[in-house]
Amino acid sequence: MTLPIHAHLQTLLPLLQAHLLLLVTSPTASGKTTQIPQICAQIQIQARKKGGGGAGNNGCIAITQPRRIAAIEGAKRVKEEWKEQTRKRQMEKGEQKEEEGKEENEVAYAVR
Image 1 (cartoon, rainbow, N blue to C red):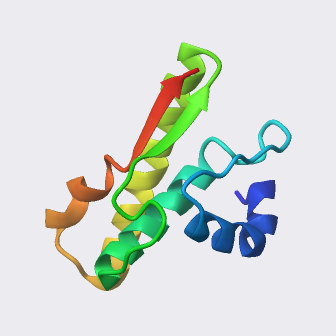
Image 2 (image 1 turned 120 degrees about the horizontal axis):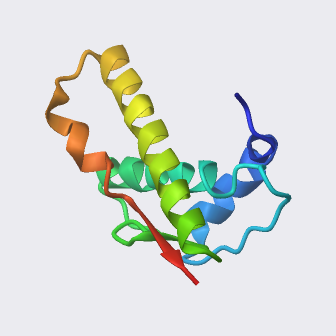
């Protein structure tokens, strides 16, 4: 399923790479909570592999939610989606499972 946020990826990617802080507003169910953190994590992982610096290269991706339940459920969903994407990438590349745990702790959720 493609969420509305994906239509704006070409605009978001350079902004996410260039800034330490980015505030994104869009309608409910557009992918802010689940998709943007995964995009940010992927940018970090790629930057680390290249040995490059850049905004957020060694930092934490923090997503704030107004309620505890929203933070917990958002984190669970991202974790499941991220695990599935990691498995698919590993299968495509024929990689071993030794890298599996490294990408799971890239995103933190907090109640504001």
